[in-house]
Image (cartoon, helix red, strand yellow):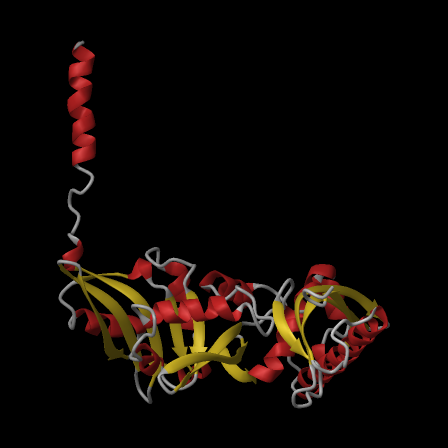
Length: 361
């Protein structure tokens, strides 16, 4: 009985002290998005945050501060806000294009070192200024950070984009052998934002933006188990075929003489969504085989064109395949081989399989 009398007060103290030394939500700002820009002499950082005013009233604000370093900018930001900010709830980091071209080594270092920052927010590059993006009025969401997070989620249903745009995924690309950072690129169109391509980095600097049309084929070579609508080429007005398919990519690495050889196999299984080319709605098996072969030929030809452009003209692996040679061969073997991506042999084989013609099959 004596032990019970002692235990009860201890239990009460445990539960009643859970909010001790904690600030009420009205004294906090919840950061949703952070933007990074640069001018001629200083860094320009923007913060989008929510202020809780009580009685279910929530305001959204964007504050910009400048400084010669990231944390000098943070110092100045703290002089402009009267409430403690919660940085661990950031949903999106936005890097302005000029800032990305100058280099983001310091940002990567901050993301890794700072215990208060999660590694799961979205990281993107934007055309123009990140501050301008954050100051847009969000549509169907409370903050632009939330808008961009949702934008990246829905984009994974088209153009063979994938979900790997979180901060931790970008950090893996930066540090792993044979890889480079490839980051989604967005732009402002009127009062909205849209995915416009891929930002390609050399070490920590943005060096190229892959436009959306080329990003379609780049993603098909880069990503496994991605989805997209695929159109018959060339498209004739009101007379074309469209599929919705899921890709499967496999890369096999061997060596041929003194060169590295990459064999990329791309398989796509999908359903016909539109076929206004054939006169009969009920497509026979011979026609289905013809569609499969035509899509396979067209995709393979376009993939070879993209590979030639970035391999031979730009000497740049934007397809994320060099990592396979680093996994296959030891460092000594790579030094002995001609491991230049420009001189590598890259073969691609595409097979398209129609699973269904819709309700008619």
